[in-house]
Amino acid sequence: MSIIPSVRRIASRTLDLFYPASCVNCGAGGSWWCNRCRSRVELVTQDPCPRCMGFHPQQASAHCHGTFQFCGIATTGYYHSKPLRKLITEVKYNGVTATGQDLERYLSYVLNTRTRSFPWAQESSLFIQPMPLAPERERERGFNQAAWIADRFKRTWLQDIPMLDVLVRHGSVTAQATLQDKLLRTSNVQGDFIALTPVRGSMILVDDVVTTGSTASEAARALIRAGAYNVYLLTLAIGK
Image (cartoon, rainbow, N blue to C red; front, side):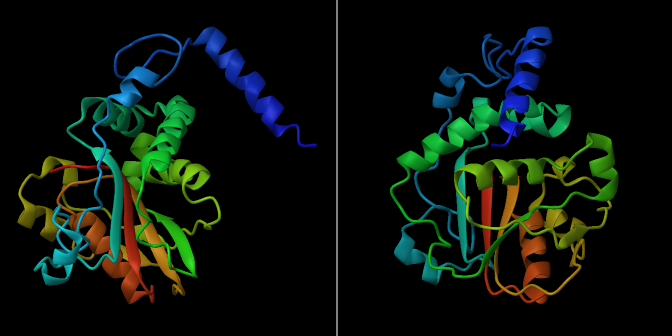
């Protein structure tokens, strides 16, 4: 019998003793992201269009003039929903990874309420690829939040799908989060990504939030150039 789960429980209780949990959104004690705040996230009830990231009837997707090369997009909630935005901010910029178990509870809840199949449901050869960070960004933060989020998705939604790490990112001229204009965001990430090895299978690209889709689209192009059959996008939130 493995002793790792027992060690983790003891370590968690020891940390709770010295650093009592309080919700990253409302400050209530008892958990790092409380049930009340999790239940107040505005959930996405329809998968975005893989061509334009808009929300329109599924039958209209074939006639959409969007240029994204995703074969499907799935997300959980809207970035304008404060509880979800606050969680992502605290994880991304302050490294509050103690929210992991509460995030997994949220993902399990979203999974149980989902009534439609995932876009990648028919894939036979499928891998998870976290969105890579530029090396200097990862050094600043101490970890890649997309990889951490991908691990939470794997534990809850994607248990039988292996994780790959074939994509790397060069530093953009300007941080994407500081740019609002869609054209500037697109040009800022062109050529940013490269796959280190050939890809033989389809990929689920995982990130924290997608806004204009420029970064994710450029990463998808790199995976397709490396041989990926299809590329899907999975995020915690979508911003509009």
